[in-house]
Each structure stands twice: as structure tokens, then as C-alpha cells.
Image 1: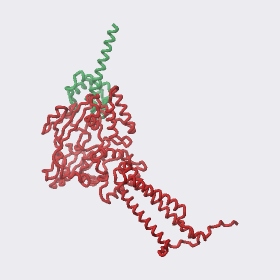
Image 2: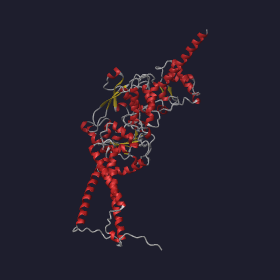
Image 3: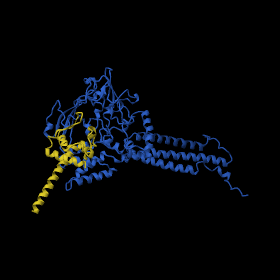
Image 4: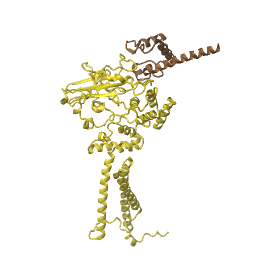
Length: 109
Length: 500
């Protein structure tokens, strides 16, 4: 029984580590060029697009996980209708997007 | 009462020569030594034995002649003082005026020695002056004597397309007036070098650079600009696979001479009958809010961006010439992205190493205090990324990129010297052609479309590059979709990894 529990624990840990690794890799490939490695948005593109600081806990409170999921899935427009972020639906699965949302949430803590 | 010290016997004074004194003797030693040194160094210079040493010229034609002149000056100062002293001791007061009596053999011999010596001295002075002129116009004088300040510029100059054009051809020009201007300006630079008072990095653009019509156009005459140029730009993405992504462009460089048809293309700007003037709001001329175009019919059109009101200061208006786009023609610092892409394309860096593009660029763009520290940390950083892999050649290639393009002591690299050709990492053409400059009657500045200056013949990798499209294809941004975001290349691209 102990052996079985150990195997389940290791598998669960490995799966969560893999998800984290995927989210980190996706962040680096798809998001960091605008939002920066750390999510603060201090990049040339981030400044041009006026992206928000995702490491700021106050800003994180202004949107829900569902909002973040929707923005990644369908793209994001500013209040004046200006397109700010393209949809990543063709590049990321729903699970990838959920993992990225969790990754972003961890930045604000 | 003490007895006064006995003075020299006036009878002996007549035998004393005015040349026999310590000052003249010291001067003679200095002059003889420097004359010998001059001949020795001059021989070395003429035979080419010391050509690689930039200090040889300074020693031969500046230091040695200076010592020779000082020594001769001491000889004559000593003679003059001794002559006065001897006259005083003889009780004659002021020495009698010099008199040369050619009926006396002694005077004739002295005169002959004097004339011969003067002739030899003038000859040496002429040779020295000429060689000094030649030397102070040489590339080694410009670049190596002031090596701590001008080292980066000299390194880039030697790697760039104009390496066989002498520094002075662009920076000084022909004629005595230009030479004197440059040397007067050089006094200020000499002070800055001597007292370590020069800025780091050396600021650009050079505001008193000679006009392009007197420099660039001596070889690149606008009458011969015509047609299109094909360029292949091999790129590699900063992903794990270092995915190749090449763009083949047809650049419409065009021309401005009516003999070859209607002035068109990028070199329309250089037309004899066309005048383009502008005002920049920053020292590096990266932000241009006001442009005035006078076309071949004499029609004047002024374009402003939204933020610019009123009229500019006339003194701030600059007439556009070659150097406004080709602003790094001889001292181009490659960006880390460009340099690593080139090394990957030439297989100097092993593209099978995962994420080597990203890792190499990341290491190149860290802050290092000295060049030696940078080279060492880049090498160790790469080895730490790929344990167990044979990466000596790749390490050597990345270190070579650093050595050629980064100068931490002078704070000089691509980021300090924005290049205006194109629009990848800097606004370049889009400083004016950004769609935001509007004429007084509401007409936007023309040529804001990508295909105004180039068409993309092919893009991608492998077989995709063989699918040529003569009329061009729309640019397909690799990796991520950006259409509709209203971005130009330089809004994101910065010559390094964009995530920092």
C-alpha cells in the first residue's frame, strides 16, 4: 500500500512539474517578449503597448481567472476597442491556457 | 674686513669661448641624442621595420624633433648668457655687437659651419614636418594613439566596408583649411585624452562632420544609383530549436538621376533637384517631428507630427544627406541578434545546441565591467549551459562576437549607437514615414507602406525560400501573430532577446 501511495505521489508531482515547465516555456516563447520574463512588462513592446504590471498584486485583483483565460483564448482589447493582444487559441490548448493563468497568478504573490 | 674672493684673471678671459658652459653642453647632448634617435627612428619608419607600432610616428616626427629643437635652444641660450657674463667680467659692459669679418679665416670657417648646419637642420625640419603631416593624417594616429577612447571605433572601422578609406578622407578632408580645422579641434581632443576627460561612450552623430556631398558622393555618386538590390537576411528564432527564418528582400534603392528614368526608390532623397530638410528633437536624431520637402518643381511641402506646433528654429534645420540613413557606414556595431544570427548561418555556432541563440544573446547582453571579464563569463556561462557537450568552437565564436562588438570600458555597443538603415531594431525610415507626419493641407507623408521600399520575395526556411514571388508577399511574422496591433518592427525588436 505504501509503495502504491509513493508511486501515485511521484506521478502527481511529476505531472504538476511538467505542467509548470510547459507554462514556463510557453510564457518564455509567447508572452515574455511583451510582458517580460518577470511579468512586469518593462520591455520595449510592453511599453509601446502599455501592458500592465502582472507582478502587482493590486492589478491582479482587477481580473478573474476566467477573464485571463478569455483574454488568452480570444485576444484582448482596450476599453477604446484598440486590439492589445492576439488570440492564442491556435497555439495553446485549454489546458495550456489554464496553466498559463496559474503561472501568471503566481507572479502576483 | 675680509678680502674679496679673487676673480678670474682678465688675461685668461680672452681664451674662454662663449660656447663653453653647462647650459650649452647640456643642450648639445640633448640635441645630439635626439638627432641620433631621429635618424634611427626615421630609418625604421622608412624601411617598414616598425610599421605596426603606432607610437613610432609620434616618436620619430613629434618627440625627437621636439627634443632636437629644445637642445638647440639650450645651446644658444647658454652661449648668449655666457657671452654676456664674459663681457661683464672683462669690464666691457654689454658685449660688442656681433661682427663677421670675412677677411679672417676663423670667421669664414665659423660662417661655413653655421650655413652648413642651418641647411642640414632646415632639411631635417622639412622632412620631419612632411612626415609629421603624413603621420597625423594616418589611420594609426587617429585610431591607435588615442586607443582608450577610439579603440571601439577603430575596431569597427577595420571590420567594416570602408576599411580601405582613410579616416581623414571623411573626418578631415583635403586642403590646408580642413587640416588646420582638424588640428585645432584636435587640441581639445588631446586635452580630453591627456586628462581622461572624454565622455563614454563617445557621443554621435558628429555635428561638424563634412557634408556627404564632399565625402560619400566622391565615390558613391548619386548619378549612378539605380535599380533594385536583392538581399537575403538569414535569421534564427530565439526558441529551443533555433528555428531558421530567412527573408529575401528586393530593395528598391532606386536613383535620382533622370538619365536613368524618373527619380524613384530610396535614393530619391538624394536627388540634385530635391531638397529634404528636417528637425530632430533629440541629439541622436531619432525623433523627427518636422520635415520640409522641396521637389524638382520648387513646390515646398511641410510635414509635422501631431505634437509639433509652430515653426522650428532655423538653426536647428538640417538638410538630409547620405549620413542621415547610412549613419554607421564605417563604425557599425552589430547587435547581438545580428551577430549571433550571422555566426549561426556561417555555422561558426552549432545550431543543434538547444536554445543556443537565446543563451548566446542573453550572455552577450549581460553587464560586464571589462572586456576580459565579459569574455571569461560568456565562455564559462555557455559551458555551464551545455555540460558534456563539445562546444569549443561555439564558445570561441560567441566570444569573438563579444570581442568585436562590445566595449564595456567605453560603454560602447550597438545599443548606444542606433543605426538608421532599415527599421528592424530602430525606427530608421519610420522616423519620418510612420504615417503620423501630415502636411499643412492634411496630406500624410507618402511611402508609409512596407512595399514602398522593398518587396519580400520569399520567407521561411528550406523549400519555402525557393518559392519566389516576383511581386512580393505579405510579411508573415514568425512565432506570433501581430497583425492589427499597430506595431512596427522596432516597437518590439531591440537587437537582443525581447524579454528584458
